[in-house]
Image (cartoon, rainbow, N blue to C red; front, side, top):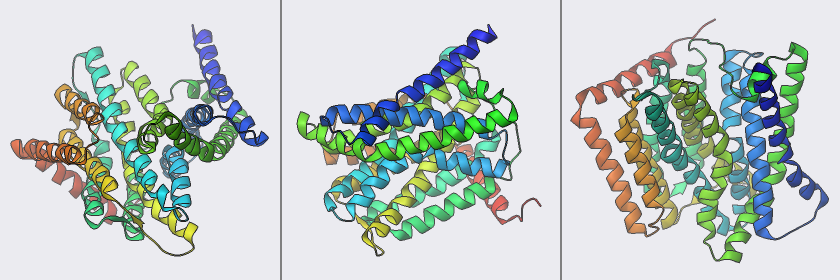
Length: 403
């Protein structure tokens, strides 16, 4: 049985490697094909590489310090989204038409993570266990920083720019998050899928395989980002689909799939807390580090400090993403995601896709905010929980730390 399980793990690893090969070959050969096929081939390359990165990250926790492991995982978790989004931000410095695509990919990835990811693991856990999924008290740090990032994010659509000031605040928040998280309780990593088989290898071989996966996956993502992004835009023009929509939803599907898949594996292994905790951490990384890097990349590309100017479409998308995050936090404040909460998150996410009208989108934002306020003020314990989380987090930030 163990042998079959091991063979299956190595097979999954081989498949992830193989689906990156066509993209690598196509890029190195310089051959160009139709946009839709380029988007598919390079999208698969990013998908395969993202899985490889996630498994390598899990194994790396065996051999490196907890603080370094946290930093590495946080950085790698947003790498697929970062590279695609960074390409748009870099290009936007010389072509303003690309500015909307920066926020499209960023907001799509964030809303998909909550609307599909959080809801899916909650549903699966309920059907499997017939009870509400919960996260451990150690997740209060993530929730506290997510709350701070979410509250700040409402400022961005109000001022209508994504600037270096936003980068400074969100990057500082991310660094404090990493510093605070590194002081938490050290626990051995819980490996899943191919990471289990790699983790069982001898020390030298394990480290070699892990480093090799990091390098191979990173190269695959970096060389695939540009043709994948341009392929999406070309596909939109060829098929008469709005490019903004393709960038917002198709691109994040490839990059978010590994994180959601790992969370599902945790649920199937009866570890609902780890499943939801993984996705909460991912949301913190995306809503701080990912957003913070875009004005930095844009400014470097243009050779001078600058801000991404947001049009009406981008303002409504960021506001909607902030509102969704606030509602999700109001539900999870009690460290559990009940079935009604997961259903509401999923329903509001799915139905909003059918209504691109700006006023309808503002309506959805209002619904999220009203529901969040109802959840917060209906039960005073919810507000007390959030306040307690913030107090605990600020105490950790002020403390000198270990050693």
